[in-house]
Length: 54
Image (cartoon, rainbow, N blue to C red):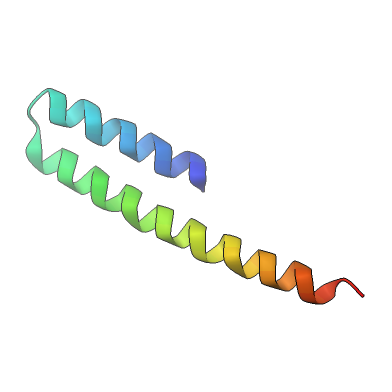
């Protein structure tokens, strides 16, 4: 999931450089959403892994 975040961030940067504002804003928004989902899933996996270990 973090890979998709980086891909959308790169697409947003390239679109911004070439002046495609709408595409850049959309790709940046998707990248931001995927990043927050990644962070939440990462924290859940840390908590679940900590509670499973005896």
